[in-house]
Length: 296
Image 1 (cartoon, rainbow, N blue to C red):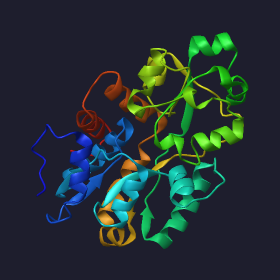
Image 2 (image 1 turned 180 degrees about the horizontal axis):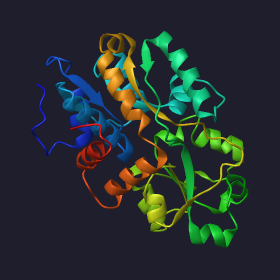
Image 3 (image 1 turned 60 degrees about the horizontal axis):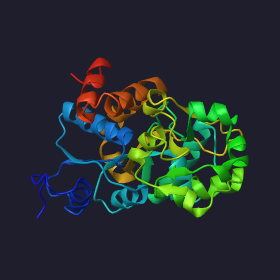
Image 4 (image 1 turned 120 degrees about the horizontal axis):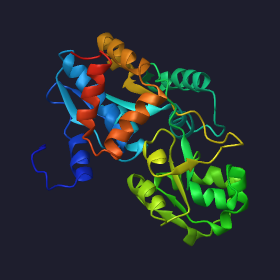
């Protein structure tokens, strides 16, 4: 039996149970990954569709890109926002990253249509992966670029999340591109939500993160320069099944208008309000949508 009333159930268990509920209500089922930016994108989508008169179901907060992709293909959800770089490298299994946002989007969009997935218009912001350091430590070691980091990586511990340890655009590719030399005990695996705080509190020397995260500036961290252009473009776009998109042109039009207004400055501000000011994602999303003139 599907339920959302028992708040004592851990969020992840609840979210996974919700995926199994099926679409008995006829609502548009909106999902997202579990980190701040994705929760914001999920709430922005839910609120915009609610404002347009749609019945919606909140299935946000699922950990793992592959789980969401499978849920979409299996018709357990109807919409979630995916990143073009993730689509190209992880879902479509290409080895070479594409740094140009427009080119990456077009290639992913065109190829994924063969899989029955429609990529709507991508947002202008690029949330590519980044490797972060505390600014004072980076300055003391003379590290500004990933190449300089690679040369001294045997001295540095690296905080990453589980998904990053296996992705081709994550740790394995980073090791190959920049010659990282960390031993196994220097790779610290933790939830991505706490990596920024762990880095700030000197529990690690390096941390993987997302370039648009508001905590980078707030915690006096820096993004090391990707001087070999390893990380691909990561522009988010709503993903829908192709048939669902064809049957719901109004939803397509609504979400394309939302995408157009999400630039780097906007998403950093929204992320900051959640992560640093401790505001609720839905409240932040609602305020921005009204300010942007996207809801009444």
